[in-house]
Structure formats: C-alpha cells, structure tokens
Amino acid sequence: MRLFCTVHKEEELERAAQVLLADFKNSKVFIFSGEMGVGKTTFIKYICKALGVTAGISSPTFSLVNEYACANGSVAYHFDFYRIKDIQEAYDIGYEEYFYSGNYCFIEWPEKIEGLVPANVVEIKIEILNNGDRELWVK
Image (cartoon, rainbow, N blue to C red; front, top):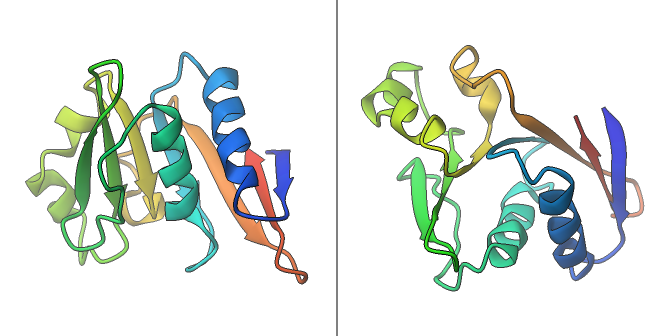
C-alpha cells in the first residue's frame, strides 16, 4: 500500500475523493478498512458527492446496502458488512449482481465477506494518528 494522503480536517476529504476517483477512473469496486469510527463512511460520503450524489448518504449498517443515483445517471452502491453474522447474508442480498454490475461499489468491512470480494478492487485503509489526523493508504 502507498500513502495516498494525510487528512487534517474533514473538509480535505472533498479533494481527496476527487483525486481518488481521477487516479482510479477505470475502477468501480473500492474496499475500505480501518477501525470503527476512523471515518470510512465519511470518506465514502465525499466520494459519492464527487460522483454527483445529492440524496442523503448514510451508512447502510442495518440494510447492508444503500443505492445512490449519480449525476451521470449511473448508480453507486454502498455496503456495510459489519453486522452480518455469516457470509450467507451476502449471498442473500445478491452481492454478485452488485459487485459485477459495472457500477460503483463502496464496501466497508470487506473482511467479513472474505472470498467474495472481486480480485481487481481498490483497497483503501484509513488509520487515525495520535493527533487525530487520518492517513489514507491505497493499493
């Protein structure tokens, strides 16, 4: 992984999201890792805003997946697998239809569905520093 950026304040995530999408313009599936409360959902909100999503963007913790309409008419899917009890729940929501749809997929807690995540994904790891800044690592 390489250090993508260090974020000192939340507003900087807007530019980070734009740069990420530009750097990985041919990628559609992004996985996010980091401890609880590190800012995975917040960063995904900024990525969705960069895609032109105007509807409310929130964590799909209980629904497992949220669907957002992008400005260009495409769709972005936001997954949060933190609360799944077993991998069968991913099968039950039809994860393959989402992951292989050609639409953006932003996946939190991918380790909960290990083995189901497509091979060619962009991995983002967020770490919190002692001073509260965040480091975003990308692979």
